[in-house]
Image (cartoon, rainbow, N blue to C red; front, top):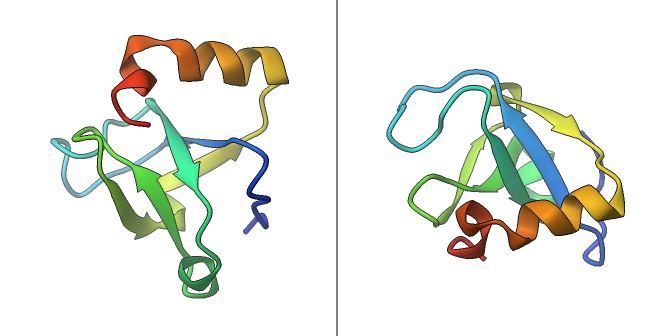
Length: 83
């Protein structure tokens, strides 16, 4: 799992879920830094309800976007209500 720096935005694409109300396959999610969760193969994600929650890392593919794309994602209505 990638180490997350607090100054960098991280994103992940959902590839599977046990609860489609909380996670949607193929949707991009914002990742919140959580070193303790990473040690247990979990990741803290802001889910469809706008809450940060721990999910198994194998539910996601982690992606690195350019700064411009990160800012565009964070400025969209979908991400705006989550932050």
